[in-house]
Length: 212
Image (cartoon, rainbow, N blue to C red; front, side):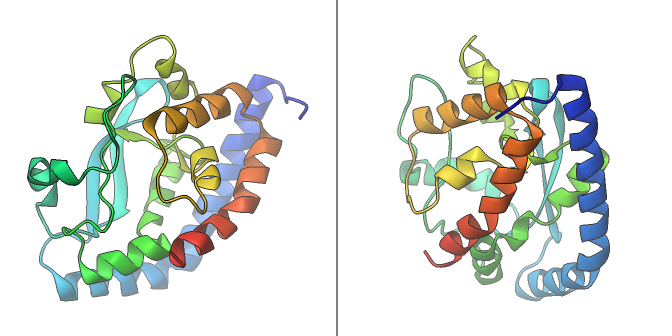
């Protein structure tokens, strides 16, 4: 793919992010209200889950999602550490549980359909994230990626969707090393055409996720 000059690419990418995120938030407002009602009907606590994440250049920002777990689930992470599907790696420490028992019924539907990700459109609008990029990491994960090699993944903007999500399609598990390698690959080859390709393949990845 021919690369667009960096500064011009950044301007086009930001303009596209603003246009899409603002338009999507306007059209999706009724859906936001329905999801918020479903969350509050099932469990107490806030509608949105807000956490500190590290994005491009290790920039820390408030990351928004619809809450999918019972309130205070983050404080119980150590209790479920033995269920972590990511094994120890020399490169990083990621945490994810398949069929996480902390997830509510409404939350499971939101996750399977990826509707829990919609509030990240606010992050895009605010400039914290892009539509396409590497996933912003919780601080406990980001702090393990500080070597010259692994830090390359933070050269790319944080994104709602990205190369990792596309390549993960159809695979239940992906090693830490494979995930970081894909993040670095995107950071080194990022351009507008590549972003468009990733966005075009994202719906297929979401359908695969919904059917698993």
